[in-house]
Amino acid sequence: MEVSKKMEKWAAQELQYADLGDTRRKKRLISIVENLASQPSTSVPQASGNLAAASATYDFWNSPYFHPSDIIAAQAKSTVERIKEHPIVLAVQDTTSLDFTTQKAKKGMGYLDYKKSFGLKVHTTLGVSAQGIPLGLINQ
Image 1 (cartoon, rainbow, N blue to C red):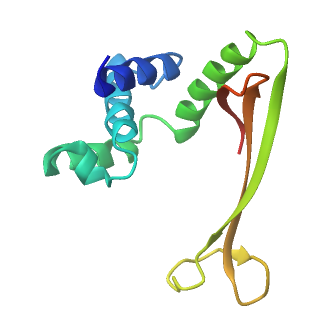
Image 2: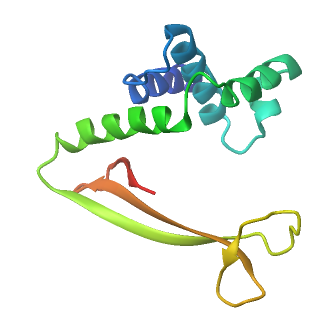
């Protein structure tokens, strides 16, 4: 199966519980995720294929009709459903620092490791089966 078909199947499965108030928004979300996931090292304009598609992607993210938490909730439900299939699940944790010290225009950042470094800490918990299969993001 070619990569784009695998990504399409994965995105549709991962976001099957998404409720964005309109089925067209859900289809658009799946399409955007498919494009971005199939080219993870590229920018949004590159993954989108053209300027119009990139602009539409940015417009989608700025939509007043749904909240990012609606997308996160759909992904979380998919993760929970996968976790239910395994008798043992490991919760693998990691904390990383996002350093914005050199980006003076950023406001609201906290201290990192010392008072002259600014940014934020991201703590992620990933569910993994006993066989090492990633099941999804549990918390972030």
